[in-house]
Length: 124
Image 1 (cartoon, helix red, strand yellow):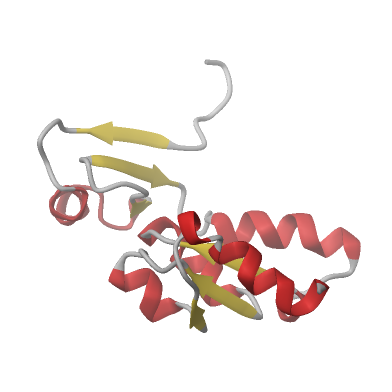
Image 2 (cartoon, helix red, strand yellow):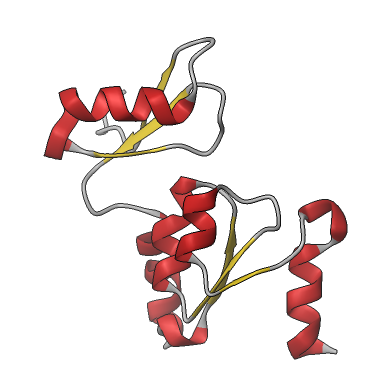
């Protein structure tokens, strides 16, 4: 508890995540970024400018990789910055509509091996 929190999770049983996020935005404003990875009323609040995209970028930079070298996969609003940042953002077949809109392409669902089907194009 002595270090600053990197993420705040807020949950309201019975709520839809999108509705909860919209309501919390009124109270949090520009003090943090609000997103979610499920539809069951669980919200993630992170410091401004911190996302899966910044995490991937931080890992890629020391390897000399840029966004153009990266393919990412996602299905929910918390994946949108990463899907938009990567050279190739791929939404899963069952992805949230906002994740689909942020992606360069859509693959099939996880249960249909969507990630593998995309990767096989390069590694087969």
